[in-house]
Image (cartoon, rainbow, N blue to C red; front, side, top):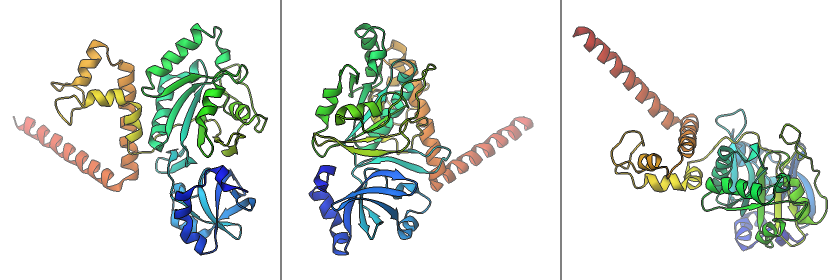
Length: 355
């Protein structure tokens, strides 16, 4: 099996050299199963288990374990190491405030797929874009199943305009796998060796798009239910090699989009807000009542929609919460701040009582 088809190049080969000297062979994780990870190697595909040592080094964080898209060192049917990732799409693991989950690794393009109507909610799209930008890959927003719109012209244009308003600097396009609209545009982005990951809810057309790009039915597909929600047809993340040389990682529908990052992705997703904040008179402006606040001025004259600013504030609070839960020093500083504030409040009460 030619690993170049999976994106293997000189940089990865250089990183792998120490492992090659120890008798390992390189491979890329193309699917994750309960019984192990399916790895594509030069000798073919194999189901490999992660070694106990690698699990020990990863510790409580599953982010250090192999994920779909990772390049790994394999020997005797076991994964001994994960090569450094160029990019990684991650989120906060559902149900846990302190665990990072890697959805896909070493991707060049993050395709956020949404369906017309409720699924194209601006707040959800903003979260998808925050995850995409944080990964280090290039995001694209796709209005999947655009043929569901009653009027292809007016209704699709309205949906696209709404998406573009919350995706500054990001390409937004309409897609219909039934008419073929938009398929060629996405295919053109997937040159040989380039990897894309599809993110979105269930039923928005991710697996159908993979099948259309591949030119054959590789993945099971499902329709959106009458209540507007999608049916889960993809149950595991998997990487597919396309006939023209590109690669696509399909993912199960995402219900939870908890942020896990240092905030760079959120800043990029809200670069309009960040640009305004940079013009504020004070570097530590909180955009409340401070004089010379460019954000407040933009809110007042309508240049910045209140809903967009509110969404940005919400994500900032979420990032701060995650940082406190995962960074002991940040949590300790916050506890000290709260104790100091409480002490000050008690002192003021005593002082007022004496007066």
